Image (cartoon, rainbow, N blue to C red; front, side, top):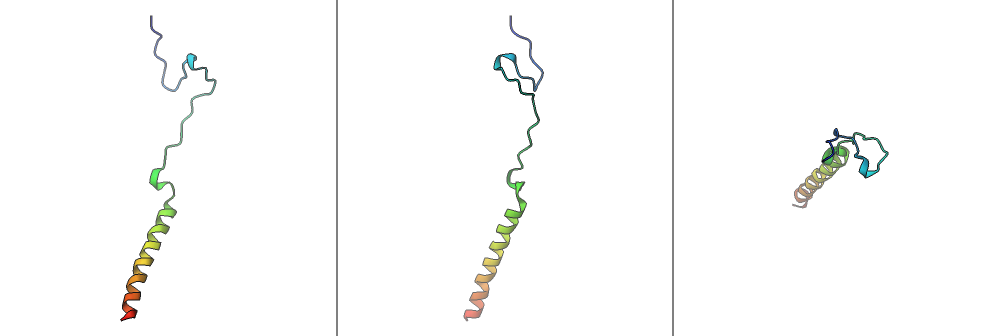
Length: 59
């Protein structure tokens, strides 16, 4: 005879875990640190603008 299904989040007794089920924090993915991405975009913009400024003043 098979064992009855357990509710979600409950640890089966055969695994031997005494810890309670807990909700994990969702992964923020790429948006976890928006300041890092903003800084990289701004640095890229300044580099491209600097390139064109140097081209203008070289002529």
